[in-house]
Picture (cartoon, rainbow, N blue to C red):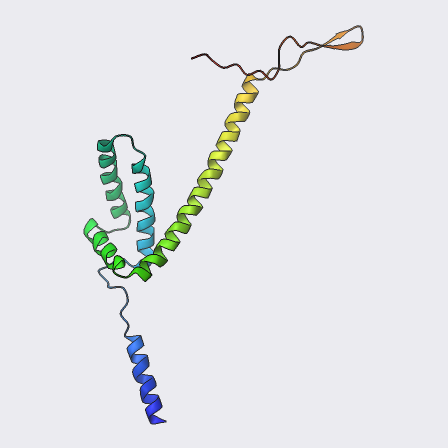
Length: 156
């Protein structure tokens, strides 16, 4: 019985001493937020038409991210290197980042759909004309001279 307890204590000490993420590395919760911000900026920079403009924009955005999370580029690179060497942690983080990006995309799609519908309603209200109904001797007479559904487009 004493051997059993000794083995249990030794095993629990070995598992309890399992090292976590070092203090000089960005912790996983914070790193997820940093990665999310970095990937959003990367997506924005990727659609810039001029490479020089993209470089200027990128540096200012990355500096803003580092300032927001109270880190510097060296800490970010060191942390990224650590997580590359621990793919199980990186995979878990990227699952959460991908989920957050998908939620953001869904929110943006809804916002864009709502804006497009509002734009269509404004355009339709501005360019549709009412059908004129004239009374001639007690019976309604419809005027079909103009199509009420015709939209007027400017020529190019």
